[in-house]
Image 1: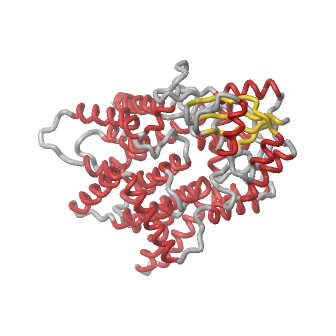
Image 2 (image 1 turned 90 degrees about the vertical axis):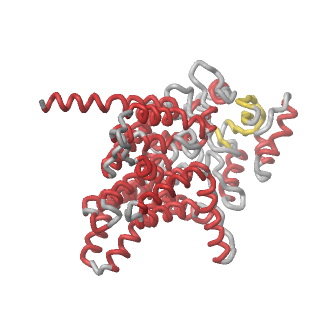
Image 3 (image 1 turned 180 degrees about the horizontal axis):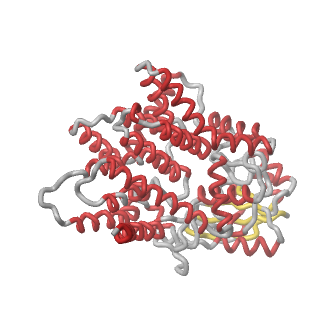
Length: 515
């Protein structure tokens, strides 16, 4: 009977998991259904991961702004498949399945009344993929989503009371905090708020021994990843580079002003308001979930504190980009579970609820996320939004015809997939234009000039956001309007136009070859 029961249980899991996998194939930009993931952030991180795999030391040999554990994750994807995003897709699927399992555990914590938790667990992946904050997938916030969802599971399983959280869970929470810290530390706001609240609560209750045990246990968890990171950078004599780029540069370059403290505080509050305002329906649903919890006399104090910490850390990046919001949208998972947790008298049509959840999982991303219209299905040649992927493979052919091992540089944009298409790696420390102007990061622009002056790279690629001029003379005139003025002289003196191709009217590229 036991074996029969287990087989029945397994069969009950198969259908929702298969539906989730179908959704992943349709919605993830890295899916094998599509030619490639065209998002610049995913391509930049994949280039960093591929470089990491080939022995480059992040921040010392090659510069980008995110955390070393994210590059390791993308390096693992490169081990699986280095010439396309299939390995990254598999990692994303594992992450999505983890979100599914955590949501299932949350549903069981709430003792759902309307439908089997195996189907309600699809709400977790739905929340992750259903807004434009997901974009085309592969952001650090996508992987942070899972750790924050685990924190929400622990909080609600403990009924919002830190006294009910075991030392084992504090150890695991410490590991998750370390993971977030070394993936992208601005995603760790939920954990920072949680641990501050925990310390204050236990000190207020005069539970000094427990405070000490919690600190030691959590730090032990935090140290596991942290020690490995520090050992790696110490072994490569790059701890100073890690601190300089990952911490100092990121903290000082963006949005830093000499304004008074009150002005900076108002700016933070304004950005926090913008986060909420950008996703009004999501915010309303989260608020409705809290109201229902209060109506049912449930304690949500800790969850509110953690939410505020999350949106504060997002705002502290001093600007708002859509995918940043993914970390606080995680709270919608809990809200939806609360809102659907109702008992309907004589309700027998569970099949209708399943169909609604599955339909939402498949359709809502295409309703809310316009980035998906950029994805080109293999064999189609053009996407729904009339985007093409011509420039990258065509430039790759030209580069390999000119040079056996071509080197390239992107001086006015992030990597658009040119390194992946050419199957080459950066040959210079600065290899793409980070999102900083000359005043914020002058050393990057000076490095670009040095590379071009000495012709250290074979090719320079320029992105042009208007239709390309029909002739070379016109294209030469277009270039200065799309690059920093400090770069025009060395570029035009040392490089000539080799080719120019368009993926769309506002997505055009000029390939320049050294003279």
